[in-house]
Length: 391
Image (cartoon, rainbow, N blue to C red; front, side):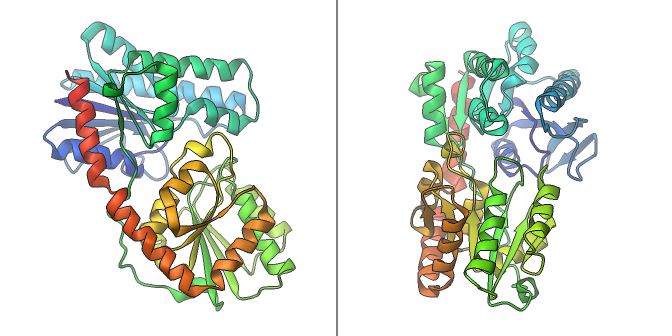
């Protein structure tokens, strides 16, 4: 089968979920092409990796307001359509796999479905209406346009896959989908170097290292972790804890400014996007991971990559008690039940001061990841979804 995957958020192979899906489909004997944006160091317009053809297109910077939001998606859709036409001329495709957000990607698939009968697999990474509301803090005309785009995508899809059961339940209800057309394909990490060396220099001479990995946007709650660090250092008077917050995003500069305003420079590093080698050493060295995504309707449905990566490295973690966060982490996390930096800081110290508990929680997380949430199970579901779409 010839498959075209379209993703807008990140380029491949940086987007771990999409790249794992593409590799699994290729290894199952399918011919796979991926369309993605040019960003984050992946700027080649066209290349082939591991037998998978990749087309990349220019996209405007990530939206910071409604105007930026419209510009980002307009440029993305134009680039995606041009790349899809190129893929069609190069041999065509029988299935087009749409990875949200946004849910506007159905506009790219629509002409191929109507004119050539191409089948559509809708891959729900996030609930876009909830994501829009969390990002802009309000409902309005654009919010309802987003809801309409989601409904249009659901109406066109021949099979729907989602990252977890709560996301799937929402889209099943909104699209009135049959059970046989829906599948859960979890985002479980592969290829992490869990034998990476410990780098004690990252602790800057302190006893404990608290780590964060992931995007730094306005919906990710990193400011709450920085405020929690200030509580630990200045209110709880702890000078034995260092913080390493790895990742980039549209709020990175503002978060650096917040760190400096709170006079946390000696205790908190914000290196931005880091190499895999640095990331894996950071994960290996940290005593505790933090998932500071605040509790809201959007995050309640999200399976966070950082949570699974902490589990892969056998690290206990502290997180705000989002619904899917609790399901994923299980007994490997200590949960904070309100979006309060002070309580987040107190929970961090509670685990740092209990090394035996941290060790047992980390072991529980590693076991749960491998036995319950592993990628092998998701691969079976992915292939089943394609079999359903091709019926």
